[in-house]
Length: 242
Ligand code: F6R
Image 1 (tube, rainbow, N blue to C red):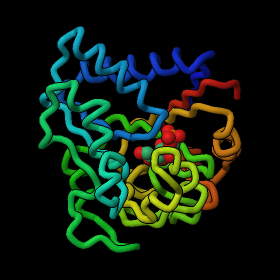
Image 2 (spheres, rainbow, N blue to C red):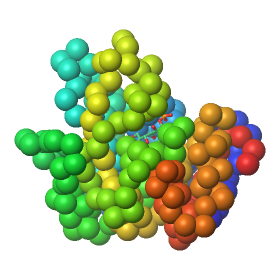
Image 3 (cartoon, helix red, strand yellow):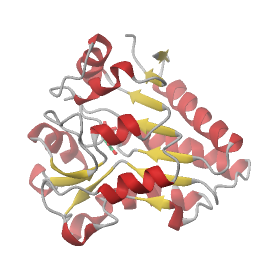
Image 4 (tube, helix red, strand yellow):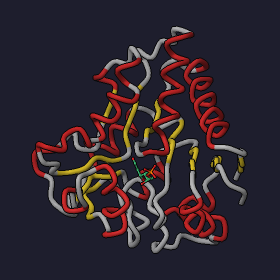
């Protein structure tokens, strides 16, 4: 486990964006696992700036997003993670949209508990994710794998916990407008189908979750982030001392 404790959010953002840009330059057909949320807004903005300045070609880059809401009402379509990725990143690049994937690409029949092995298979066929970026929830979720997620879970439709709905209500008019369901890569998807993980933890309110990971000796389903305790190539980037 490699820990990068940066002294400000700005330097942490630069660290993560430089790492991803260098990886793209070294491997123009890289497979990236992408996350959304406020943690990554500045990372994508900095990447977009460098991509424009240095005319970096993303036409062969392949991406798989971690998660997506289910049943967003019409009024809140701009809270979808497809929309987020377009606005914050894709539209500033020449990425080929057919190379970008979301776990709701198979949306015709989404219901709580439904699994989407097609998504995991697609990641396998792409040769696994070279670098996966992850944020973390205050309750230790990664992707939308909430407390209680099984070690063997694959991409599936899950229920968001009241704490996640409350945390994400800042993007909506009220907590009532936050979707109750999402489709997320599973714990096993993240553990087995990625080669390198960059976990980005901004803000003291995430300290407890991060500490559970740092102290873990095995997977604790109450804190899904603990799946990373023995992950072979994990870099943790924080903007606070740990
Ligand atoms: C988003 C995701 C979530 C977020 C987490 C932190 O794709 O998978 O796990 O990374 O909820 O969100 P922010 O960055 O908004 O604090």
